[in-house]
Image 1 (cartoon, one colour):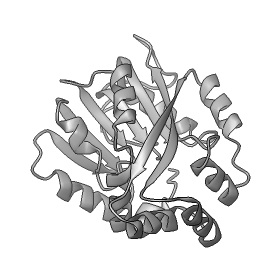
Image 2: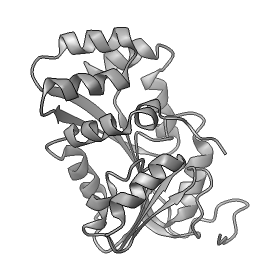
Image 3: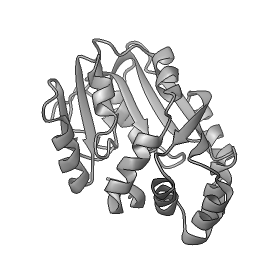
Image 4: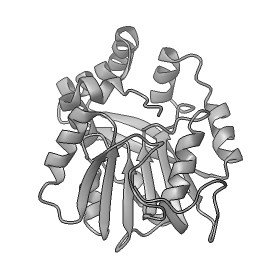
Length: 241
């Protein structure tokens, strides 16, 4: 099983919690997701849920929500977050082997987790297994082609080719929607701390110097793909775990 470490949230979960609260303050990503699928009364799986930050939003209208997270300390935090929410649970697992039955969900959601382009094919197959016919896989990731955030990311990861990643998802049958968001922090300390866990020290200094005030424009890609009705996955019978 391939687990992709996330140093930002794995090493600095409290700072990442502040960042989560600052992200997408206008709800642009949520609006784009709701245009793709209405999960009211539906079953949702959130792959790579981290500390479970997005689980309560799904739980507000969904019938049932399962968070999937491979890193035990984050699993514990996520379970604490949703302990009082009915119909919500968190399982410890990676994206390639989720301990849930076939056709468990109407929506499989992943945000900045695992599905980063070539190499994630096993997770895509697993997501298809989990989806009911006509269910939706929604992958939300940073749009590295757009400044300023994308410029800083490419400075730290020069081998990353955003055009190649987009071509990969296009070949896999995904629709693409670009979403511009605003991150808004309560103070400079939290903004600088967030940039400090996302980038190397030199790039973080550059990002902090280039950012005035408490807001930051950050663009995302939302990739969506419907599971075909009656799709039979090769070599996959109905499986319960």
